[in-house]
Image (cartoon, rainbow, N blue to C red; front, side, top):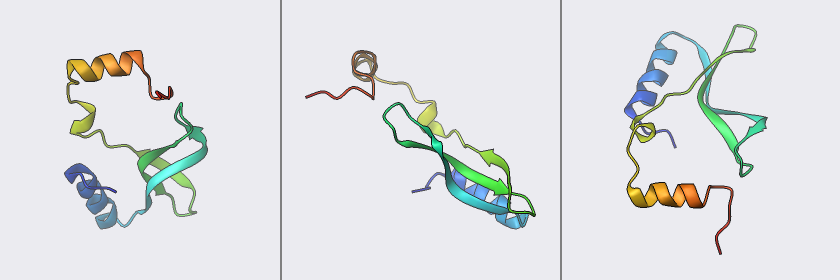
Length: 84
């Protein structure tokens, strides 16, 4: 699922540094308003295999401007609402 150049570069840096990591890391009790698990791009672990820190890369998809139609739809019908 990971395809952005930024995430590929981060993976490369983590591997080159010899760090233990897992991609698409989630917590069972951290979910979106519709119940889907929220995932971090990378979880990095210490020498004892304990979670050390998380990385979330904010790519271009987080900075793009929504069209007027998208803005209206998101305002009137948030994700958690089912439209029939």
